[in-house]
Structure formats: C-alpha cells, structure tokens
Image (cartoon, rainbow, N blue to C red; front, side, top):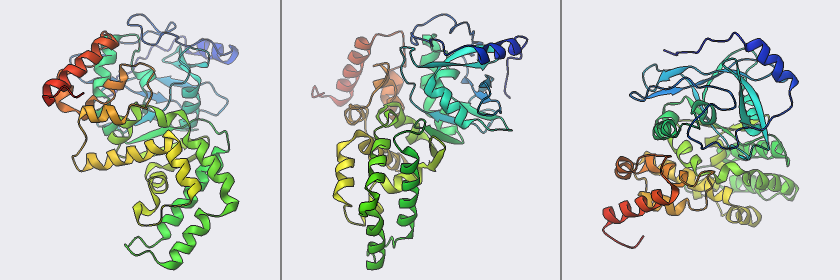
Length: 368
C-alpha cells in the first residue's frame, strides 16, 4: 500500500511561486550527509525493511508546472506497477537547474530531469516512477547506501525502464526514426544462416545509400550523448525486464534499437558499411550499446563476469561520485556484495583499498 504525505496546505501558494520564479540554483552539494534539500524535508524511510519512495507524476499540459507526490511503499510487497527512469543528472554544479512541486514543497532538480518529467507526464493520468534524484534523500549518506543496495531489485521489479537520452537536438528525431526504419529492414530479412540475395540487396539499399549519410551522422551524434557513458546504466539496463528509449518526442524499444546497433543481423550479415563500422569503433556509445546487450545475454545465461572483470570493462564509464564506479557494479558480484557494503560515509580511497584487498583475497593473486 502506498503511504503518502498529505500535507498540501501550501501547494497552491508554492505553485503560484513556481509559475513566477526563474530557474534557481539547484542542489550544488548532492553528496552531503545531512539537512533538507533547498527547504524540502523528506519523511524518513524505515531502515529495518526494504522501504522505498516512488514518484507520482501528476497529469498536466506542457506549460503546467511539474507537480509530483512522493509516497512510500515496501519493495516487493505491494506489487505496484511502476517504471524506473534511467537518465543523466546533468551539471551537478547547479548551473543548469529547475524546480518542481513535490508534496506541496518546491524541490530542486537538474534541468535534464525536469525535461524527462515533462516528457513522461501524461495529460490525463498519473504515472508512477522510481527516480533516484527524487526518491533518495541524497544528503542522507546512510539512506543512500541502503537505497543503492536495493537498486538492482528496484529496476528488476519495475514494469519497464524508461531511458531518457534528452531533448531533441542535432537531428536526433531523424536518427531515432532512422533506427526504426533499419529495424524494420532487419525484421524483413531472412534470419536463417543463409541470407538470401534479394534480402541482402534490400538491406544494402538502405544501409549503404549515400542519401542516408546525414542520417548516419545524426545517429553518430545520438550515440555520443552522455547517457551511453554512465556506469550506472550497466545495472539499470541489465536488470530491466523491458526498456524503452526516449529522445525528444520520439521513442523506440531497447530491443529494436539494439537489433540495429548490436551487430547487423546478429552477425549473420556482412560487417556493414565502412562508415558505420568506423563510427561504432570510434565512439564509446556504440561500444557501450554492444557491451550492455552482451552483459544482458550473459545474465540471462547466468554468466555475469566477476567484479574485477566488470571494473575493467567499465573503466571508460563515468560517474559523478567516484565511489559509484564500484557501487554501481556490486549487484553483479554476490560474494563481494556481501562484504563490500554501499557506504557513502567511506572515503573513495578507503573504498578502493577495500576492493583491491577483497579481490586479492578471493583470487589468491596479486595480479590486480
């Protein structure tokens, strides 16, 4: 059962304030351990159970202020159909920020998240999400550690994961529609080991058409977006049952996107046009797309690499907090997860020392 904070006596006054104020500096120190966030006070979670918060995005038009509620629930108990958001926080310096109305109080968020909330918001119905920057009190180090420990379950039990790449720019709308067009061609081809000549001709007509050069460039820029470089997306996508990619007004399922970007016809066709292959090799987004799908398949087969391997293959991924380079991967290492607790009171250097020591002890080798 959802437990909501119903204190909304000041909601109207705050909403009027939201309509009149310019964007204000957001939380500039998101990893402090105490205090309210810009005047917003969280209702504490029960640390003795797997309690989490969910975000109810209230319906509205594009021009309306973003209004949300923040009920509590127990993970796995209420069987709620919620979605989980996967996105980039943005500039954590606070220079690119916005505000929403949360349980009748103003709450600072990064502009990219505000744009995601507007995109996910429905006109007439509420929508239920788990969103880390809102659902976790980022200034409570102990709560952060407990909630991060639950994140794999949170994404695994979500109805779907909504991937937000950002607003439309650099012709991203054309890129998204082009991927859908390529996916339709992949589906139309003979997926047996022997690819028919007619199918191959049809595929190459799209795949190597010089008139599509601008679309390949747009796709290149889409794959250069920051989301592809986040270390957290490894867990968020691998744990997800279903996933949908949103960019601007366009959307496409992860499965169809990966159908095109993973490898042409899962390796049954040719290596593809040289310009696209060079793009895939030359940008981390393409490498990460292939890495994510490979890890998804390995998890389905019960073959997730050890922690030291995960750390190695994700070295190029970014995180706003360097400790998350480890914490984002612990769910794939059950032995280390039991001994390396998500603790944001621990310094980065102490955490890295503990990780190296644990790997040495378990592997019996100093070759770390």
